[in-house]
Length: 441
Image (cartoon, rainbow, N blue to C red; front, top):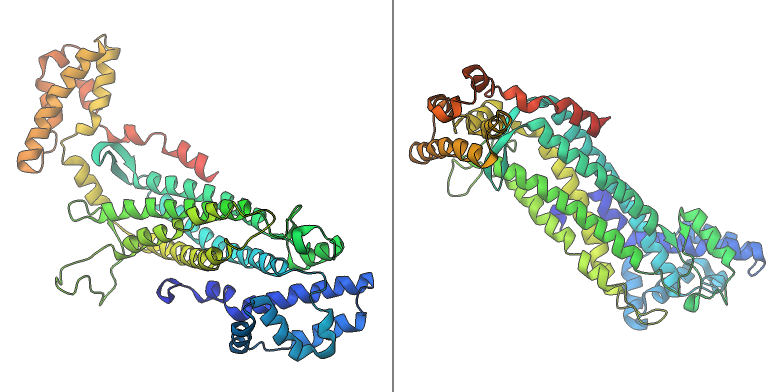
């Protein structure tokens, strides 16, 4: 992971110290359960908790042991024995390495998801606040990047809110699916460990039980989890891309907050670049990068192999760290976004009212004109406005209205009052309340 795009709360989940502490807790809870079954002495379980619980595990020393034994769990158990003493022989009774590794990964991913949920809630809160603020801030909608019909900036943000609300629901499902415990021993048959041990560990670690672990937790769970994070990354990119487009010099309807003393370019002092949303676009790519490897991890050999291991050592911390950072960065962008309603209105009016073309098409058909004829009548006036816009860069306020009023074929079907009424922009916002009710109810 890259420190530049990481928050301490998330990176600590993936630190070696945290990992070894979870390993110990799984082993110690297992000892409690084994002691209740009479497999090991209760005094041993108590001693393991007391000595291991207060131990400061030496990451460097564990790494040294691993270089010799070529096995990470054995290296940890060897180091743990230095603290526990004689009772260390009761640790890992009937366990296999995957019991520790997979259950630990589940704990880490569950904790990471809880932090992601905090970021998600912050994004949702920011979107709701700004959507309400700009509920009726009229702006032109664009399809294919071209002016279409008016919408409001609040509706743009409401759409994003609805999207991230779906993401939150998916994330909750993904957490539930990934937060599972597997302590079933070699090949997952419980031959050397009682299933009650697994149940006890699961309860203490806040996990559910994997019904059939085959020594490892099936990786379809992880594939679904990382696919969910990938979708969230794509939703982040969608909103970031919208803001980047709105900040373009030719548009400039909204822009990232530019702080006092901030510099936009090492060469051009005038620049105010959308660096945060560009960064979010890149971070989304990093998050999605984990999806394909996670899918490929599903197909393991027989009851287990470790082809998934190296992949997950990379994608688990990197993806959650990057997404956590991205969610908080996105929330900050929305909270501080500078919006220019007057520029939105000016941009919309540059095409002289062309955004009302569909209203004329519909009005002419309702007045008895065939649709193809109506389309031709409206389009021939619209293209004149486009040509004026192409040459002068601004079609002029009311240019489409004036052309329509001068078109005898159109006016044969419509009255002047009807025509002028069709340039009332509030027509396009009459159902904003309905949409907001659907989103925020």
